[in-house]
Length: 97
Image (cartoon, rainbow, N blue to C red; front, side):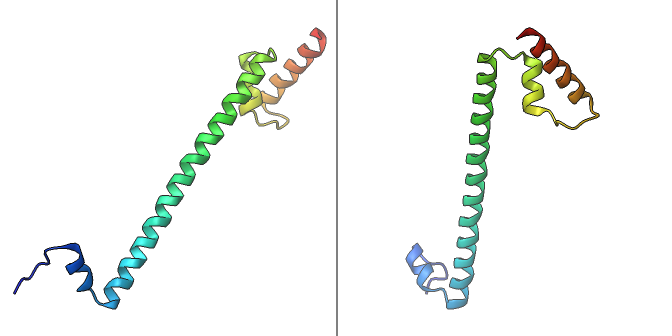
């Protein structure tokens, strides 16, 4: 009599219903984890691609690197240094064009 199965199917058919339930729960949880990781990676790739295209478009419109940084990463709240710099850039833009 063998104590270890020779193939996967011998091992699989020897499992009782409690073992199969636990195995199926682990398989479902593993599948959900894989889907979550893949979805997160795809979301971050898409977000980076959109941000890159926005930066390219702003460069094509003639924005400087500082203006792009304020546009992409700025908070827009009054009273912060970024908003004061953004106001100064807007005034310069109005005077120029």
